[in-house]
Length: 204
Length: 221
Image 1 (cartoon, rainbow over the protein chains, first blue to last red):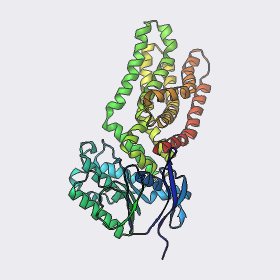
Image 2: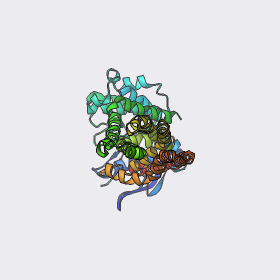
Image 3: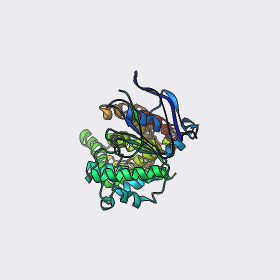
Image 4: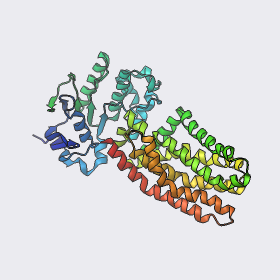
């Protein structure tokens, strides 16, 4: 069997003096979804931030196609699409401006902006400033940003937060499409994502 | 480069959407400066002598006033994570943010100061030098202040802490900025002053983006 695209070995993180997780290893191949579960404070967000390189792990390696990602962090960040527990949107910019700016910050050209808007039914909201939107509408905008990024690895922190049923369905179909296209996704979640994938339970 | 320019444009656009934020800073500058003639009285000799120092100090305080939100807004709404995760150097992002700050505060302050200098009875030549020194010196304020803003991210009372950190670092810029106008009045050359100001700004330009980026990474953990 070919080695997985993403390979995490013996990852360990501490917060202050408290170990959050220790000796965590897993591999993820193209088209695979990994759901991170566990109690509050079990380290789901810290693991996602460590994978993204936002938190420096105390031990262990993260490999992409066999190469340690710490060797070339810029390229690694270019492979990621990030959805944090904060939406990462500017209230004074419109939905379309937020998406376009975020994509340009990634060095992209936002050519697929319209399809990302349509995927989350944001067309009618595109010209509205984000500060006038509800929490669910903001979450949809943040998810549209992830789709727009066209990155191979999605890192999602509670993607279903504040989403209503139609928006959850839109997210599921976007995730399904991403996985069918050979993409990878790691999502910290409490609720079932409704997409076939593996689960990694973090102990509190 | 696309990322740098789009970040600069984003920040300028955000200011454009809320012109009040910059308006308050400039209004503070004007009010603070105008208080001095009112407090000291209409003795032109005294006023002319302190004009450059007063204008420079007020510009420094006004710049600090707006620095508190420089990274805090991005930190609170999660867009700082997107900057940290952008596939290009964070140092450039820090530079873009400080650059945007300078365009919306340092530049207008430099333009406003000579107008206020008239109230202090400064000569046209002194007014011009005031403009030049502020234009050359304020980038250093935006950059060193940017470092203080990044270091105080997430801290309680970050505004006061920011001022405590940034003000001592801005002392050299202040001394040579205000000193240039003084030197002109004494009939000395001002080239040295302006050259030192430019050197300070260049040193800030060459070091601060790295320091700010390191502080931002720390804040992101």
